[in-house]
Amino acid sequence: MTGKGAYTGELAAEQITDLGIKYTLTGHSERRQLQKESDEVVAKKTLAAIKKGLTVILCIGETLEEREAGTTDEVTARQLKAVNKLVNSWSNIVIAYEPVWAIGTGKTATPEIA
Image (cartoon, rainbow, N blue to C red):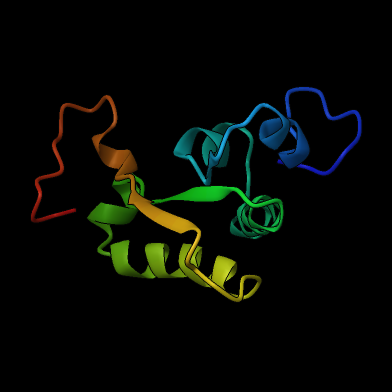
């Protein structure tokens, strides 16, 4: 979610709100992995969406390698801290734990894990 301008494949918050949409995702694992979106980029997109009145579903989660290394807490805390540096209120943010290691691997995240 960038500002106004010619950003092929991106949407501006204004476009989303003009359509009457009230929610958006940031930090989805596919964007983090395939588009190389850093925690800082996710945080900036989250802030931009909130400033335009959107509720953000902020996806956080670790890869299989990170889980097996026992760094789940460190990874998710790092992802949250990046956003926390920029936002003053979390009232329009829903945190969605997305265990990347459970996507298409046949491994399941139980309710206890989540």
